[in-house]
Length: 231
Ligand code: NI
Ligand code: MN
Image (cartoon, rainbow, N blue to C red; front, side):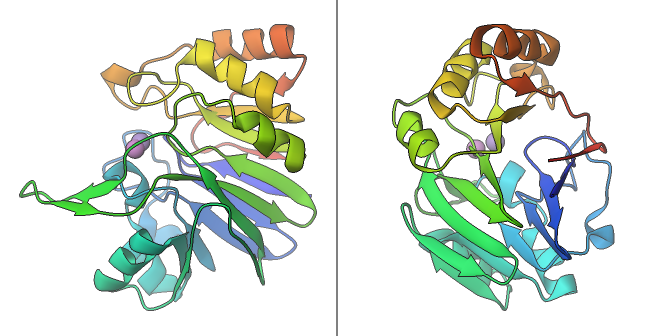
């Protein structure tokens, strides 16, 4: 069993077998956030890419918890440069077994940079998706991405208990493409993310849920920020 909590936007906390990790911990400044970074207790922070709405409160959370930051090589080094002590750099296609579970990075079709308040752009490597296996449950967090046909390879080679996919359009897949992504990934269950945080990414999650269940025959659950499900 694994417990998946949605903390708003693209941030998920995953607990299984006594281990807890967080993905893309953007809480301060996240209009959907239901938790403060200082209340987060985790052993690892997993990052899909360097955009501020994903990197978020990584440094504060990692420092407070002495947590390991797992990310693509450039982003992991960026986190280290920002003051994170424990990093584990990986890259696309690579998999590694951690005490909390197994992480594999996948491609994602997107940008990846940390943009400072003064406009300086710091390159943070290629954007990624994350396949996280904890306590026998395999979860795919797609990160920010458009639809790409290699999602079929991801689903075929890594049978997924859960796929978490963006539906907000503008910066990522919208609903129509996300339905196609579910067909390629063929997971047991789907959760939509990365929508309704701001006006450009407004999306009707109920319509996505209907379409996934009707067109893909896959269970789809709209998890509201602050809510959890168990798989
Ligand atoms: Ni992004
Ligand atoms: Mn984003």
